[in-house]
Image 1 (tube, rainbow, N blue to C red):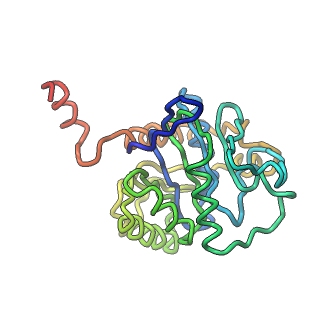
Image 2: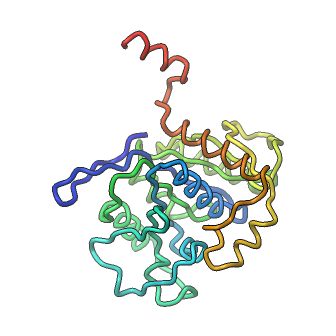
Length: 263
C-alpha cells in the first residue's frame, strides 16, 4: 500500500508501506513486531518502527535504549537508529522508564499526528506501527490518519478472548478503510481457531529462550531462538512482506500475466 511523500531539505522522501500490528493484550504483539522488523533489516529492507502505545511505550526498554528526557522532544524529531532500525517511541522522551502517561484523547491524537507527519523518517520501505492492546483512541486516530494508506496484521493465539478481539479489530479497521494482510498465531501450532475468516500467514511456536532475552537489557537484539522458531519467523516475514507489496484485488498470478502481456 503506497504511503506519503515528504520533502525534507529539498529531498523527496517516501514511506512506501505502513503496517499496523494489532491484537489483544498478552498475545506477544510487541515482541513479534520487533522480531519481524529485525528480520526485515537482515534481509536489507529499510524499516522503521513506531511505538503507538502511549500509555506503556516499552519498545525502547526491549531494545535497551535509555530514556533521553523530555528536553529532547522537539518540533522536528529524528528517529533513533538502532542497528539500522529507525525507532520512535514516547518512551524515549520520558524522564524515567516508569514515568506514567495518562493523557486524554485529544492529546494522544496530536502526539500521533506529530509522530507521523513531523518526524524525519527518511526513505522507508516499511513503517511498522506497534499498536496498544485492544481497541482505543490510538486505533481511531491512526485509522483516520492512514485511511487508504496502511494495512493491518492481526496477532492472536487460540484463546477465545484473543480470537474475539481479532474479530472486533477486523470489523473496526474495515470500517476505517484499513485492509488486513492476515493473521499470525503466536506461541501456537498451525491450528486455525474457529471463526477467523482471515488469511493465516503463519504460526510462531512458543520459544522459552525469548523469555530469557526479555529479561536482559537489549536482549532482543541478540536473540536467535531454536531452528524451528527461526524457520517459522522467516516464513512469516517473507509472506507478510509479499502481502504488503501485492496490489489490492489482484492475485499475484493474474498480476504476473498482465505484466507479461505488457498491460
